[in-house]
Amino acid sequence: MARIKVKYGQNEIEIDSKDFYIDNESVEQVICNLASFVKDSTNNNVQYEYSCDQVPQTSGILHTLEDVEVHEPEFVKPTYIGKDQIKSKLEVLIRDAFFDQPRTVSEVVAQLREYGWSAVPLDVSKVLTNMAFTHELQKDLKEKRSYYSVVKLLQVN
Image (cartoon, one colour):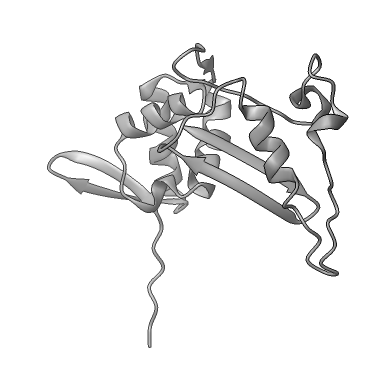
């Protein structure tokens, strides 16, 4: 899965897809192309102009950007996250709409792994249960399995 986000001020472009693959050689060109589209919406001027020619090929564009993270789950061992970090990582999944569909603990653990994080399934289960208890997530029981999803607000007409 490829996920690239280029942000300048309040404007951002994000690509998130399982339909294509970006390797280490082409990621710099993709980021460069995306960066050329980030605009300031207030006056419609390009605020971030970047030319791939500005960066020497030896250093690469990734070294010139802040907060850059490249993760290829099939080639890199995931980083272990402890109990105290699980909730913040689950909040990333919530923000990325992963919980728009009901998910089991094993699906959540697998998705964390796709993001480059490894956690003990029992610890993930405990955090999910706690988040359901505090109404941050909704917990449903189907066929003796727990499913977690975003809390759906009821609209009354």
